[in-house]
Amino acid sequence: MSERSSTTLITDRQEEQPVDPRRWYALAVILLPTLLISLNTYMIQVALPSMQNNLNASFSEAQLIVTGFSLGLAVALIVSGKLGDLYGRKRMLIIGVCGFTVMAALCGLTSDPSLLIALRIVQGLTAALIQPQVLSMLQVNFLPKEKALAFGIYGALIGIGFAFGFILGGTIVNWNLLDLGWRTVFFFNVPFGILVLLLMPFLPESRARQAQSIDGIGTILLVIGLVLLVYPLSEGQQQGWPYWTWVCLGLSIAILSAFVWVEIRKAKQDASPLVDLSIFRHRSFSVGMTAAVVIYLSMFSFFFILSYYLQFGLHYNVQSTSFVFLPLGIGYCLSSLVSTRIVRRWGIIVMKLGTLAMGGCSLLLMGSLYMDAIHFLHVQNILLLWIYGLGLGMVTTPLVNIVLSVVPAQDAGAGSGLFTTSMYLANSLGVALIGMLFSFSLKHSLIEAKLSDYVRAFSTSLSATGGLAFAAFICLCLMRERNK
Image (tube, rainbow, N blue to C red; front, side, top):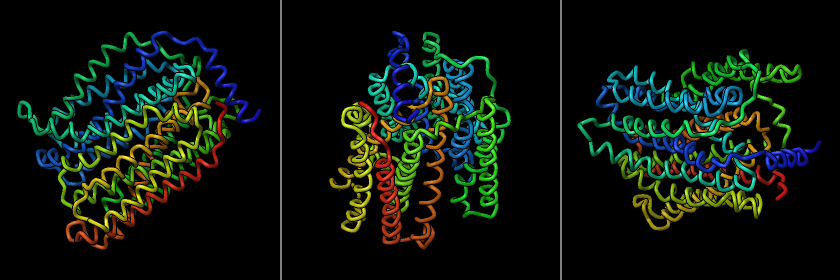
């Protein structure tokens, strides 16, 4: 059976599936945890300096408060998605939101940096229980003609969290309610999480696979391999890439290769693998995943170097930096609302234009720097950031739908977990690679470097992020158009 025929067959089956009349209410409920996680991510970034000072934490400990969450999240996404397929997505979602809320409360109460790091890792694990369930429920609960709107709202909420997370975090920390300071960014999650839990009992259960077990060997290999991969990528740049980081990366490649071998063997024996790697035979999935990784490499590294240039080169505080990111987030939010429907009507050309907008804005921003490096908030720069956000939303939101549309409904959780794991790995890898390029081009320490050094390093890094965006365009050119 050809890829197009099999994809059409999946779509036809989804059209025939009875849909729950409460699915739009369910959408509002399952997207609230997504907004919660998105806001939490950026609010923590704002409050981090205050945490470090109040807890007398080292710079390395402060960074682990952030990267620990990402580590816990990245290593458990695929497994938690599979658990949703096996034992019920609603059940896993409830457990995840409950755990995330409890961890937020404990994080706000602790005064020990080591304990806070440990709690943040656990909080990342609970967030991993949430994200694949949300994507898989979006995929299986809605008819194909409805998914454009559902995924558009999903993308817009992520944009809202990105656009306003920094500002909200800075505002509530500055308010310093009850003299709680940075703790308020954690306590903010508690009533939010309780509200979601109160709404959960009315959520319809998403159909799950029955009478199967989790792949123990595959799970152990995957988790160990991802830990050895994500942690060095997260910490290596900050510690100057010591010897142990390269050892861990080498071991991770060996262990993840063993994981792939085990999964292929289990699939041939019909022994219920953790991930059915045969899904990569679908061109929409394999090419789409490649395009997604390249896009996220470009996107996260762009955010990273822009933040460094503003805070170290131009000496912006975090609050001022958040306003620079605001037009980008607004553009992303607006285009996410309509991009999936536009792609459904006009095809992949819309996504290609999105990648070209990202790459073009990166290069035009380089030219703007050499015209005026000091005053960043010119109208042309704000416009470029807004267009970059529009392009980002035009490609990322519909790409999720296209990639996951070829995943069978019974494997929607595992497929969603695989997609989000790739996204977070691209985050870590992009920051690591572009961070090395930025540091090499800077040629001085962050403190000793002059503005001209930052302009040179930022421009060089922008050329790389723009090149990645153009590489994503090439990937999309290899993707076949689906039947409308």
